[in-house]
Amino acid sequence: MLRIHHVPTTRGFRIIRLCEELRVPCEIVPVDFSSQYRASAERRAMNPVGKVPVMTDGSLTMFESGAMALMRAGRARGRIENEIFNPLKTRDYNIGHGNSSRSKPSGPQRMT
Image (cartoon, rainbow, N blue to C red; front, side, top):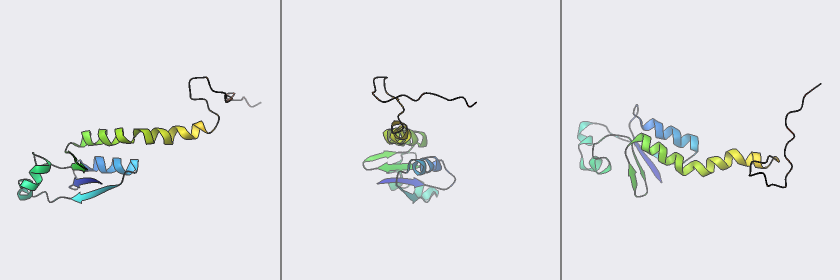
């Protein structure tokens, strides 16, 4: 399960919002951002600098919001392309290489 360790008003909202847009289920883990917690061994094990957000996905741990967003978007790429282009494929649009036996749309019609 994807877990995002997050403190309100930090860049963690970037990855949280992206997961919402991509409909990727994630667990948001609120973090105590006090100086005692940031210096704790538990926190340093996730991020050596002690900053948030931190994302864990199985054995993968990331702690830079831009890198997290790129990784999540890359993993969702195929699903996004299918959602966008599948409706076009079912309407007799030829979006292949031109060797299809389907009829091509005739283009815009002028109304007289």
